[in-house]
Image 1 (tube, rainbow, N blue to C red):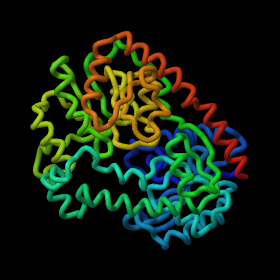
Image 2: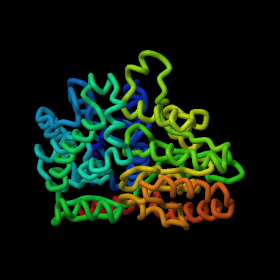
Image 3: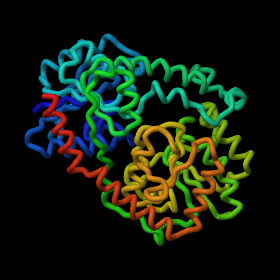
Length: 416
């Protein structure tokens, strides 16, 4: 059975072969790919785009890789890439084509060029829904006040980012309307997919996470007490601003609290960094100064898989404060490790977190509830330990590598 994956990233083996820096995103896909090729019935090819001029094909560690040349913005549809998809289809002759995500346009070009037959899409996020909540929790006046020079030159203010996401959502609708099979994992994504295409066959399969997170377990004794970790904060949907607003109330009760934030520091240290500062960066910086919490906030820089896992393990609790999500892998990773998890009650997160049992939930808008949830875990070791044990048990089942591999292979066979 020959399976062609269409992805948005280059896998680590390919990055090493090309001598380029490995990406820190998409590790869960690579983990699943390695599991799939351990089954002798599966021959896997992975195709994506790169900023080159020719179609490239490489065989590395049991996987065939196709790199399709694409100049310019991959968020816009390019008809030029259709001829390359025809070449890939002719050379590999896939039995099933699996497109991972609807965020970019090159997968849609395969469908238009090569037909919808035996094509399935995995839902990651849904941009057509996400855009509704793009800057929830930030007033329009605050967005305007913090527009940066970089935003003006790139025509990329928070307002414009939302408009761009809305336009990409139109392509997303065409993706879902153009296939007979969609793979999802939450009641939230199922509801939206079936609204867009009531005739589609909705297939369920949970995510397999990055390998490192199956090898460690959190302990209360081993963590830094009163430390909080937020893994992503690059744009408004991820909700860092809400955590910052909640922090002063926590500090009144636990003044030694520290907030660790995955990603680059929003505070510029030189002229170049200042020129590259986004409007959201400026808003976050002003919010930190206004709340007088600069000494409590630590930006970790970009973390690779092992560094990210270690940061989770050192933290007293993890927060997923997003204004909208499907089933964030960050929550799954936190639960698999057993790090007490707090998450906003949005999208598909309620399918992952049972409040009071496998984490704590709160309304995204109500930062007071977030403050209370943090203090509840800080002040009750029994609660932290209970959440940790329950999370590990449910996450081990949900993210079972063997179960998810077998489920995915069964899905491919059914489509064939």
